[in-house]
Image 1 (cartoon, helix red, strand yellow):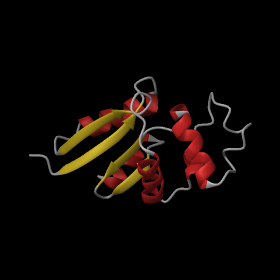
Image 2 (cartoon, rainbow, N blue to C red):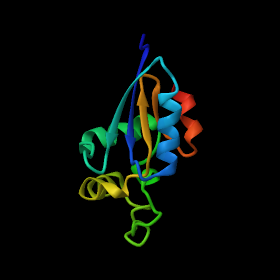
Image 3 (cartoon, rainbow, N blue to C red):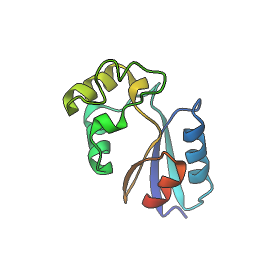
Image 4 (tube, one colour):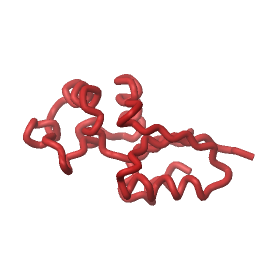
Length: 117
C-alpha cells in the first residue's frame, strides 16, 4: 500500500544520488519515480518550482564539482541566469533533488531525504 509519492532527480553515476535512492527504495510505503535528469531534464518551470519548494535560490543548487559554474559566475547569478544555464546544461544541476508531498530537498547528505518523508 503506497501512502506517499516521491520523485528523485537521479544520476546513477553519483554516489550521493545512489545512496538517496537506496534510502527511498527501502521504504515500502513510497511510490517512487526515478528521473535520470541528464537524459530527461526537468522543464524550466519545474526546476524553478523545485528550488522554490526547497527554500533555495537556484544558484544554491548549482553543481560546482567538475563544472565551470564558478568561473561562469553561476554561484552568484540571479535566478533566471542560473535556470537558463541549467536547462542548457543539465549537468549543472546538483543532485539528487527529491520531491514528496511534504516538500523538496537537495539530498546532500542523503539523510536529508528523511525531512520530507
